[in-house]
Picture 1 (cartoon, rainbow, N blue to C red):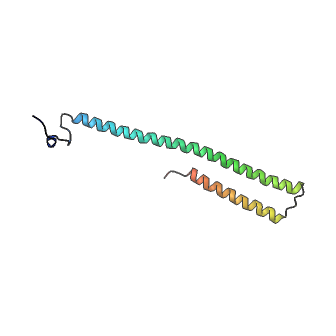
Picture 2 (picture 1 turned 60 degrees about the vertical axis):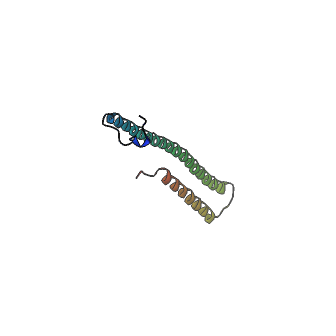
Picture 3 (picture 1 turned 180 degrees about the vertical axis):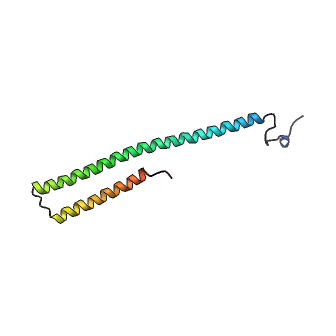
Length: 115
């Protein structure tokens, strides 16, 4: 006897194959959870790497800024650059505000607390 496509039941499995069916569903569910967990771990590892990289760059930027301000102060005093006090104050204030603003923005982005 030849079976017709309409005779085939693609519905839920029979009771005899129910344990096998359930174990396959459990296995697939575990594989999905493992895959999600693995992606989460990869993401966290990348976050740590990027945080370290940007933290080093910010440290370099701020160190360079501090040495530049110190250099300008020494040059002004010793080499007779003779910048007026208002120019030095403006220079130091604006660069400090810019560097600290950049620092705060980047740090808040990189090290935000999880919600």
